Image (tube, helix red, strand yellow):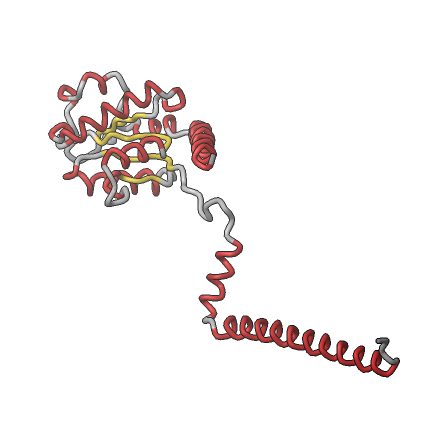
Length: 225
């Protein structure tokens, strides 16, 4: 049985109305979701909003890159104050910075890991030769490890610097043979400033820094792969 024109018209109107109601309902749902999102953002404290934005904009690489140090001072535990004095001397009087002493390495990590980071994360390793240095077995291990590292890695050649400070210096006759072959920094010597300028050269630092960065990037790529 065929439908009349009026029946078709009514059916068309009803269908159109149903579609219109469905579209309106969807629009209301979308509007409600948008309003809720805007409400949540508005209610979020300013600090949290900035933090959330920071997370979205954070690149895959670390925001801050670790700094390649100019020097690290390896010292006996009893010589922490003397090591700090030498650090301040090199940084403030000679402009050789940044530097660090071993006592300031991160806590809660293994000593071997800290030693590796200290030696390979700096251009020069300073051995603070005091009378306390050879009494400490750990200090002996530090200087032997540092010397071997400077031999096995070409860019670390001549990077180990023995230093006799003003206070409680280790006598030359008691200095281990392996360290006697290296010209030590003598703080009491009149030629100390000249020694410092000759050893801590920016060109040497930049070469080591470039190799250090490339090594870190290679390790990161291998880790990601």
